[in-house]
Amino acid sequence: MRIGELAAAVGVTTRTVRHYHHLGLLPEPERRANGYRDYTLRHAVVLARIRRLTELGLGLAEVRDVLADDAGKDLVEVLTELDEDLARQEEALRDRRARLRGLLETEGGPTAEGPVSPELAALFRDVGHAPDSPMAAKDREVLALLETAASPEERERLMGLLGEVVSAPGGAEQALAVYGLLDALADAAPDDPRVDEAARALAACVPAGLVPEGAGVDEGHSFLRALYADFAPAQAEVFRRALRIAAEGRA
Image (cartoon, rainbow, N blue to C red):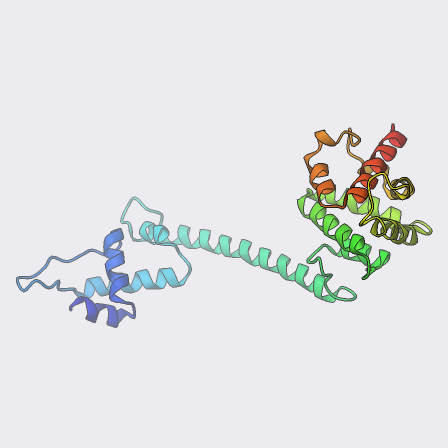
């Protein structure tokens, strides 16, 4: 058989056959006097086996192990490893599907900042979306960022602290009022007299456990510097003062 006939008999392409030659998976016959290679039934048998193994999901390195006479792993060992890997993939897919179902079944559907955890989505619902508040939208974005970057333990702690604030009597209303104060400062100067009122209102909403060590020193916190830079000057000053007030209260 010539290479095209071999490839057609097994159901692969001639390019695939040449690739297997290059990798040493399929022996390459000597050329005959006419310059063509003459493939035998043995080549077709090996090529068919390679195809069956790859269709099971084995990588070519694993196929090489199976085809090796003595040095490689035997077929049972390779297929057992493949089965275990597929089991892990199935578990990961089940987990992903469970997360997707949770998002789709969440009351009101996924949030604009989503996907976020069901806990954070519930927190957003409890506070209210405040669609006309740019500060509320920005706050949800920052919280989604913090949740993504946090470890599972820190995420649980964060959601617990925020949940306590929102679930407290008047907590949601207090948060919405703070958004309103901050929105009103979008075009104000940092020394605007309303900054102090907004800072104290914001500090009253911040759980002590959320205030980082040394929060009053901006230079020590690159995240805080980036946070301040994303706000208007007066709004950034509100956050600076609020963190200082909260840090002093914790001390």
